[in-house]
Structure formats: structure tokens, C-alpha cells
Image 1: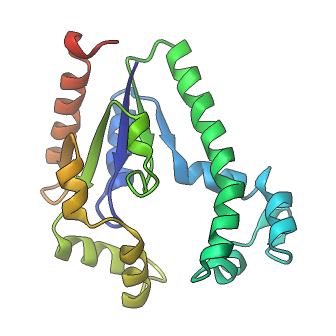
Image 2: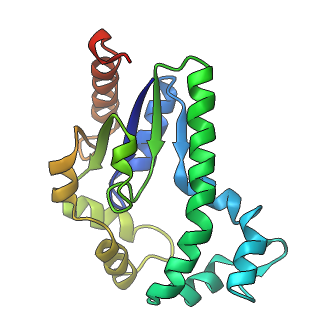
Length: 198
């Protein structure tokens, strides 16, 4: 089974691109969705023990947790030590299930793929990209997003140019959905070619 990593900075169209892969029949592991599930399930007691008062009604209060860890490197590290192994276990189960089901390709949708050195687990990496002005416009249109929040997020993410440089494939979402979908199909043709089958 060929493992594709999918990543891209905020506002680049990564989620839409992941959906396009899913529509082509590729099983998709969404790391963010896994974290959301964990924050309403098995991570709750662990996070409450490490950060008392950050959970309520059986789930993590993301706002309160954010206030506790943002700008505090030690607190963030403690949180990652709780969450990352749980996310890794979910990813491993996903890959095992996809292989059992005979999927020729599986996609790992991981926003901080390069930042967490996750590319080593992938056979190839797809970076979703768009020009900076398009990215800014899309992101600032999101509810609750501010210039300051955007700058904080971008500071934590590897620059787009560096991601593009490291990528095996780039999907440019600035030219519309049809163009992006055609790029997704082209990538799948390449990775499912007989020479890439393992």
C-alpha cells in the first residue's frame, strides 16, 4: 500500500483537497478530526489530570486549554506527550485497516506533517498551496480569525515555500476546484503506477 502524506499551511485548501482524495476512493486519516474525537473521549481524563479545570461536560474546553498552553513551551510539551501517542495509535490502526481492506493508496492528512517530522512515515508527500494573498484572504474570512491569530499560526508553521520545496507533489488550489481535482487524479495515477506498487 502506498502511503501519501497530505499537508499545507492554514487557508491553502488542504481539507477540500483531502475530500477530493476521499471522493476518488482513497481512505483518509484526518489527524485534526482524531484530536477532536480524543478531546471528547479518552484524552479527557488525562488532560484534566495534567491541566485541572480545562475540561467540562465530558470534553476538553479547547478555549481554556488553549489559554493554558499557548506561549508556554513546557505546558505545550506536556499536552503533546498526552495527545501524540493517542493520535499515533489511531493512525496505525487506520493504516492497518486500510491495508487489510486492500486499499492501493492511503492518505494521512496531517497539518504539521513536516513540523512533527511525520514525512518519514510516508512514501510521498503532497503539499497543498496557494499564493500568500489568497491564503490571507481565505483565512481572514473565517469566523473569529484576526490578523494577530493568523500571524501566531503562521509563525508555528513551516513557510509555504519550504514545504513546496520538500514536496513530492504540489496541488495548487488558487485556480479553482476543477483544476485541483485534476491534479489529485494525476497524483493518484502516478502513485498507483505498477512501478510504485509495494
